[in-house]
Amino acid sequence: MSLMGVFDIAGSGMSAQSLRLNTTASNMANANSAASSVEQTYRARHPVFMPVMNAAMQDAFADPAHGNASTSVRVAGIVEDSRPLQPRYEPGNPMANEEGYVFYPNVDIVEEMTNMISSSRAFQLNVDVMSAARTMMQRVLTLGQG
Image (cartoon, rainbow, N blue to C red; front, top):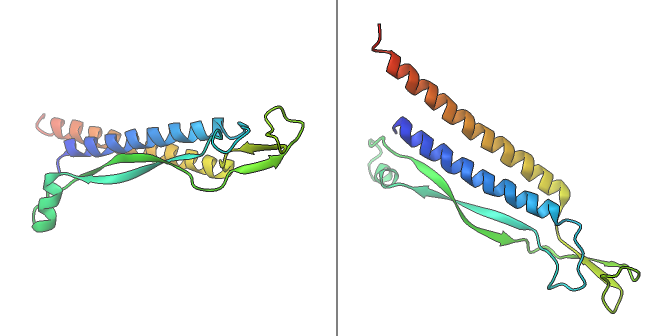
């Protein structure tokens, strides 16, 4: 794999983690939003990642001696969490339905904080990979100088 491939891989990872971080922020921002019906209630969202193999990677599986393989990541989609919503009996709440229930999102703040830390660290690791590749390229350029 060339060093340019490293930039493509790390860049796709940074893009995916950035979307994950934005989705997590959206979940946390809506964690306490109330609604009077199940249909109107915000549901937690999570990105789904999938690997993308380039043609060289597919050739590498066919011929393991072929060493020009790389893969990147892309977002396959964003799915809504299927966990149940949180109905609470709050008859005094202006958002309460006829039965006195208010519905809150199925957002788990602890899980979202964990996702935020994880995506932030993964993003930073991809930045570190790009920085290391850049440093290696600069050193290669100075090898011929004497």
